[in-house]
Image (cartoon, rainbow over all chains, first blue to last red; front, side, top):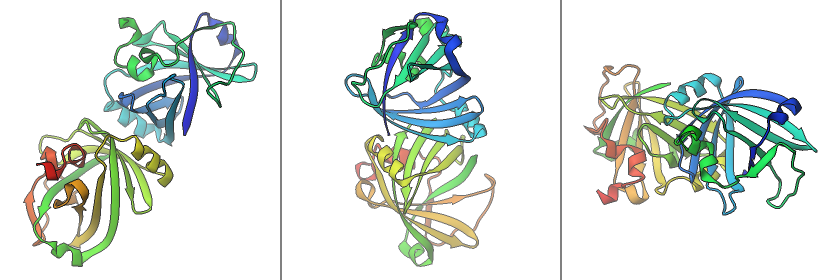
Length: 155
Length: 155
């Protein structure tokens, strides 16, 4: 139930040719409070409700709970989410046996590309792919919950 | 996904002898905003996550979505809920073929007893049991989400 992850900007589109899966993601928030974020996500034909707790000091680790829900239920729930639905394409990219989830944002967040890697320990080291840019772990404005309130195009 | 219900105070404990089931309920809120309430409930040995939308003008009808979750997950989620966990005993009482859910509150809400009846239509009529008191449908302060913020003992 603990999620440990680091987040990076992406400096080239070279990851696309290495992608092993591509999914369109639409998501909204029933709460954007970082102490108890509640997210509704439609990812391809699947849907999920996800609750996250507040991050630790480094921004790497937080409580995460997720459950699959019916697609039609997610559509109804998205209707009552806070304004600012997020639309993005997610590429799953394997590099040196590590999985990177690379999100290419659309709409109000067009131009933003973020890569996330999930780790087993906070101090776990991994090799960085050449397309990986600056680390933004723990920077609030890059959280999807915050992007739904103040989109990248408004920065 | 629409919940239609009316809510009443309870003026005597006579409902107890007619109760067909009794459960202890502990619940907290991941969001108390009436536009998108998110509740985590442990009811006996079962647990649920529930999302409710805003009520219509009469306070009778609102969108409701609920899903069963693991008891151990609910315990973890309660830890990150807003302060003000609600503790109550729920009696299910059948009267003239209508089911009343009667909640006897404990802790900060001790002294408050509320009965709810779920209906199929807003204008559905039903016979009132003798222990049923004043109607409080649509009165915000009686919503559990609001009781978790301003408890009955503080009124």
